[in-house]
Image (cartoon, rainbow, N blue to C red; front, side, top):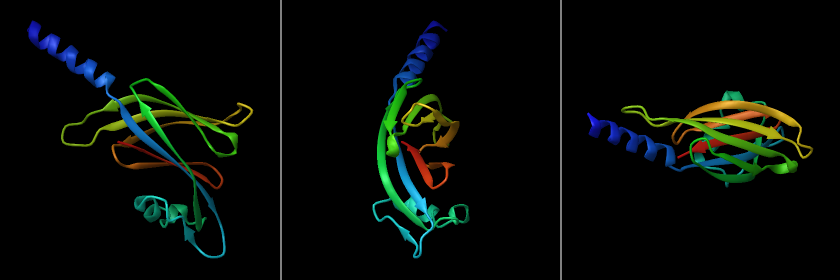
Length: 145
């Protein structure tokens, strides 16, 4: 029984120290004459932007891409366009048998004057995109691997 207990602690310690890579793609969306999707956006994003939930816009331009490397309960900050900042904390990684890992991230966006624009907690499966569209015409697409 002592061996099992020691092994369990070792596995939990490795899980807590694992690094996780996340990408935040910042996209400006607008209504224009001819539909246009930036060619530098990942193919999965291009497909999603054609779906009904994004139909109020027809022009999508990549503004920036931010790489974040998290440890569990680690905080990362990315400088967004217009002087805004995104602070994110990886609060949980759930490993489910036979399924992809699920990430829980708490995020807060502030403007250049450090005034909170929005805050949210998201859950996303490994490799999938999660879209934050809190501000009109600005989309953050978050993906963790």
